[in-house]
Amino acid sequence: MGSELGTSSSPARSGISPNTCSAPPPTHHFVLVHGVGHGSWCWYKIRTLLESSGHCRVSCVDLASAGVDRTDANTLESFQEYNKPLLDLMASLPENEQVRDIDQFA
Image (cartoon, rainbow, N blue to C red; front, top):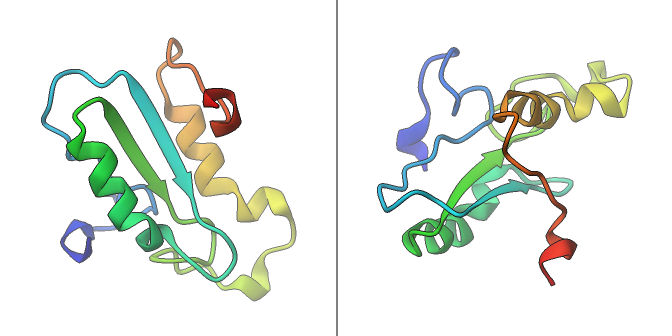
């Protein structure tokens, strides 16, 4: 995934990895969010498997101060700030794209 890193204006640099799936139009869009002490890099195997199925689009997000996000963790004052990269991604999704929790797929 290191080759995805680009300039500060690229999605990967902002913590949002671009979709590289070149299969038919995806039927699902998975947004994978890491836990404490990780970054979007922890999803590389699952992302590859999902994208290679050809039926999905996958975005991996680095939350503030994680992964490629260079925010100093000591400057974060709220969960809102910590989650800003995820919230920005969700706000950028097309209006007609549904967002569901993974538990809704079970």
